[in-house]
Length: 68
Image (cartoon, rainbow, N blue to C red):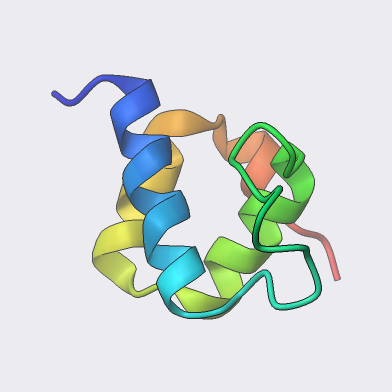
């Protein structure tokens, strides 16, 4: 199993490639700047199923789950 830091870095790079953080200054954008809630939200919107499976390795189901 991959280390959590590597998984988050990989997912963050995928989100950046998809321009998910378009409203952020690209020069100062890093995975440390983006909070967990925004990271989860952007992942659910922009990433595919294989990446979302990795998201569940980073965060507990309860944190990812939304009640709408």
